Length: 372
Image 1 (cartoon, rainbow, N blue to C red):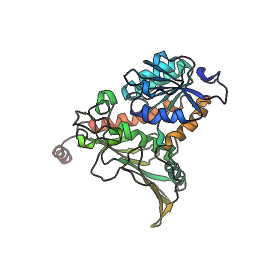
Image 2: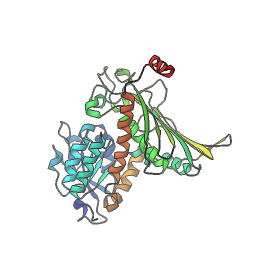
Image 3: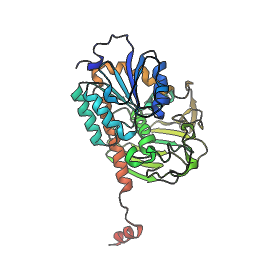
Image 4: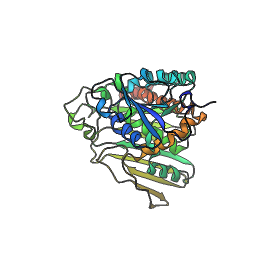
């Protein structure tokens, strides 16, 4: 395979010419400042149809109202639009031969993943995908430690916020626009982390799940650091999802994603249980200021010891991800890899939603059936 069409003429040491598509919270707060500061990139265009975009455009870049106006001089489009627009926007860019880095969730259904794969092939280019949790140094340390625990028997992953419902009353809490609630948002990171800990392309033939929405429309539970505290919303998505998965090799995986809870501190907790010991990482994914200091421990034969962690600032994982993108962009083997991983992830999410929303027989009916 050759290099993607839009990067084939760029010198090996030249900065990647980037267009940032979408100036919502992620585009404006996560991607644009980090791309502007990174020596491997040069932001040449910003796409934002709404008002107020001009004040965020870096020097030397142009402001466009539509991603379809991007030209062939763009080496990479970083797409950070609302969830329901991820596939339509990325699909059009890919089909034109423009490489795309797509913020998570990469897609909202397995059918959308198939569309992205077809566009990637048709355009002869590459789709790269965003899920920064695996680039955290503490997650990397946990992954390395997990490899020394013997055969893995169980993984427990939870990201539980005290108060952190994003954009209450906006598109984030609309199932039609977001595709779902905490499971699509936080759960995508957790499932991607599970893949990293378990060693790659893992399948989950068995999926059970439950959903609840006790906090999603409580205006006091908004994500204050995103500027989204406000009046009660009218969201129709879950604020908490719980799942129990089995891999094709019999490893069990428990997942909990919560935008809000009764906990005092936003906590991410990942435990890996192996035949020769267990390891637990406690930290806080994301940008909430209500966070835990990362701590990684290993337990064997009743003795728990601390494992040293490198000290890195909040959001460093996004810079580390950007560090790797140029090489992935130039590597023909990258084609199909991200969309394949996204297909696995969204398939698990779809099946968890289906299982959680399925009608449940009443306990009395179950008891009667057992007596027949």
